[in-house]
Length: 263
Image (cartoon, rainbow, N blue to C red; front, side, top):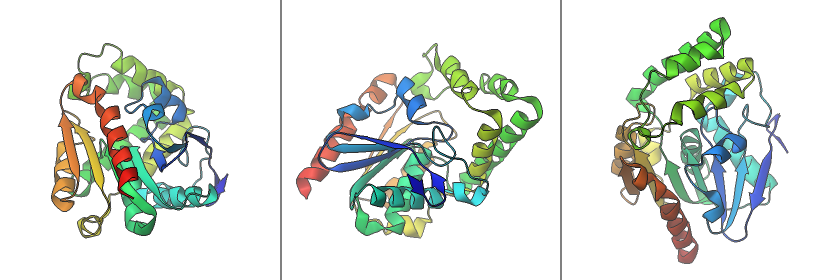
């Protein structure tokens, strides 16, 4: 579909309560399928997945401002409208979680609930992360993606994945699947992204589920803790083990089912 000047590719499965899922930065529907954090096929309702602007099968656009999380939220809201979805559970991982938060701020009447998986850096921790994305984009442009892959291999995985022998190999394969120039542009687009203000987040009144893990500076526990402080109605689960993360799909499925039953 043509959404705000870009061709966006989406898919749907299931019936019932609408859930719109957004993937993380440099991810896509296809890449998530290789090792999903949440098994979306297990969720109740009708699940809409899409490749965000500049990712996967969706179109890249030149303006960096279009990659801000607030702008990606406008993409999501218009996509939902184009699909005939009036109200939905906004869900996603990392960039997708940030997109969902902005959607709830921009159009609270349309968001039934939020599912925020590994919410990313924000506020005081965001500028340092943005600098890392700019550095990564420059490395790709000046030295190629293999240099960035090599640098990433020196970083420890999040705590639940430290014993996963394939973590770095999967990450490298995902980065190699990109056109390098397109990957650099997507990473640079993340430098203009920020979470909603604390005041705006505190105004969100819908049910919220937050799933976070430890040992990941790009998705720090501090973000989940601050979301819990700002959103007293939020259910927050922080895990440090792979067994905990394996249970996330069940937690999301139960949460969505409860939201459906409450309406």
